[in-house]
Length: 87
Image 1 (cartoon, one colour):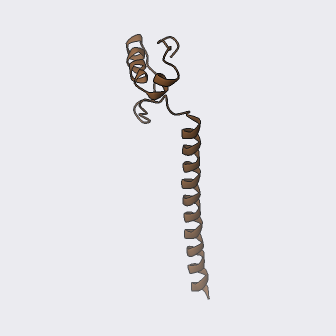
Image 2 (cartoon, rainbow, N blue to C red):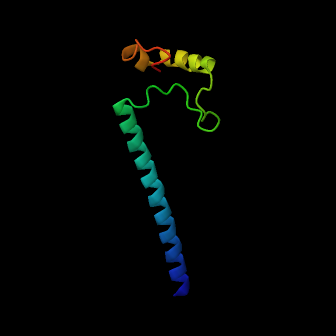
Image 3 (spheres, rainbow, N blue to C red):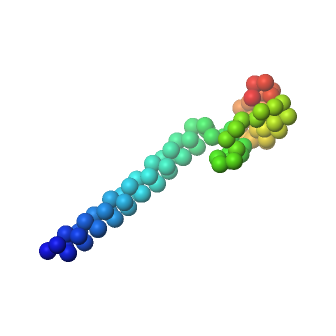
């Protein structure tokens, strides 16, 4: 009887772990869909999440980032009148 309870607990723990994992994948997919449909992420030209968390620190870096942004569809279709100061 004790063996059965231990095995049932293990199966329940695995089931909970799998449900949490599937739920996280569904939530991430929904967030990505919302971001894509709203156009929120279109201005991100590069996303170096680990190494690139600092914003540009000088005028040259801002100019480089702005030139990358100028190549994005969002700039071409919505913000073609932007300058570096607007960016």
